[in-house]
Amino acid sequence: MPAPERVPPGGLTSAESADGVELLVKGELTVRGRLREASNTALYCTVAHDGREAHCIYKPVAGERPLWDFPDGTLAGREVAAYLVSEATGWGLVPPTVLREGPYGEGMCQLWIEAAPEAELLALVEGEEPGPGWKAIGFAEVEGRTALLVHADDIRLRRLAVLDAVINNADRKGGHLLPTTEGRLYAIDHGVTFHVDDKLRTLLWGWAGEPLTDEAREVLEKLATALTDSLADRLAGLLTPAEITALRDRVAALLRTGRHPEPGGGRPAIPWPPV
Image 1 (tube, rainbow, N blue to C red):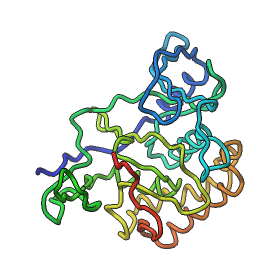
Image 2 (cartoon, rainbow, N blue to C red):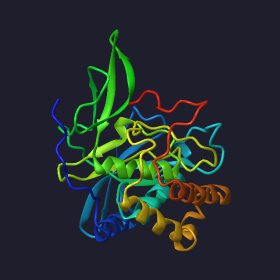
Image 3 (cartoon, rainbow, N blue to C red):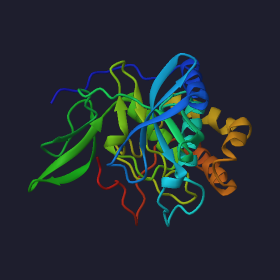
Image 4 (cartoon, one colour):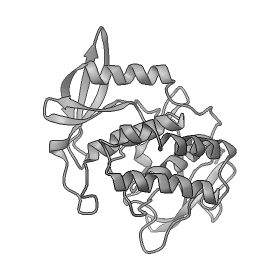
């Protein structure tokens, strides 16, 4: 299998992201349909303001199912918090996301991202080693045979692996990865994040134990500073004080070890289903 094509990383520019947030906050929200495969209420909408219109996802708090292991806060609040942390890194990995009133009450509203169908970031391969340009995740049983599950050795995914470690993402699945035709990568569904206990479950284990890139260390240092100032203030209405403290601690731990985290024992390291 050929190695994946190298593409430049980067999401929306700061100006584009700000424009997206303004549209989501000020626009008129109109429900067009429902995503029935979602485990919580997820409504496909249009949002329009001042001659601009875009598609978005609206997830009302009223449609959230309670989670015994995430008793504090809301899924919507954690989704918005993930966007704010992503923006603070400068990587732009999460689409513009806000908390706002909608037809069914307060909820998360996020710009809709159209994924490129031809982009391949995950694959199943024969043998025990990934080919050039791929990183091994683990073995999987597929139709009575064992295959190696791999993800692309891609700087965009590596950045996302760092972000997931920071926000303590308990559910990074393949279906949450949205590469675009412009070469950008976005990640969605961040409702089960920011827990005070280690709950990292992800498909992006390919760099586990490897040194962080110089860029990642610089970003984490910037993030550590932001978490003592403006970013902490913006997260205060979305996360509990204990969750914000744990967030600071995870950033400090990554800087101290200088390495990507490794799977912990006693809990599944990969979410199910993985895609």
